[in-house]
Image (cartoon, rainbow, N blue to C red; front, side, top):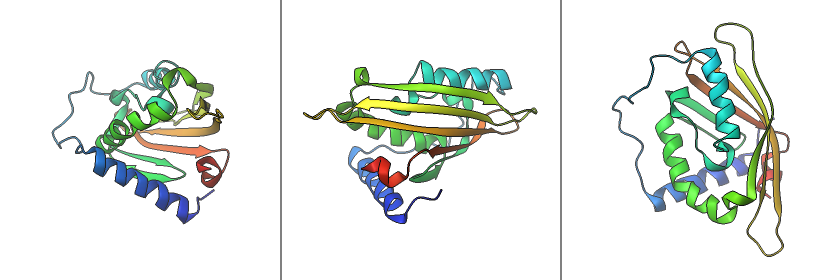
Length: 174
């Protein structure tokens, strides 16, 4: 389902504001040094599993950049942008705020399902829940479930990241 324009505008504006205040440019257009020329379907599946289970990336933003194409499009119900460098800049700037609001020891990602569609370039589909206790006196809890589809390109790296939530973007923001 498409999100109302006010939620997209709010998140986009806040992201731009944080990036403007925190600074930092996108990575230069120089090619990233890669550990390998391509990513196999098995490596992609295992890397995504590690992003969830070991790096808790939905909270930390800590992804394995080796899995992503430089021009990957990242989409969730509130925002869409292109480029691994843009993702890394957004996370670098938002992470201190997120760490203060929902400290690392008070949050977790639960990977509920992970599968790869058939074919050499089959998408990887993940089902997940992120849970976190907000640092406020009354201790509100964030609980958001959703799905992410990862579409690999010719070299096996992710060219499209498409995240969907089980509640509306407006509900999630509230």
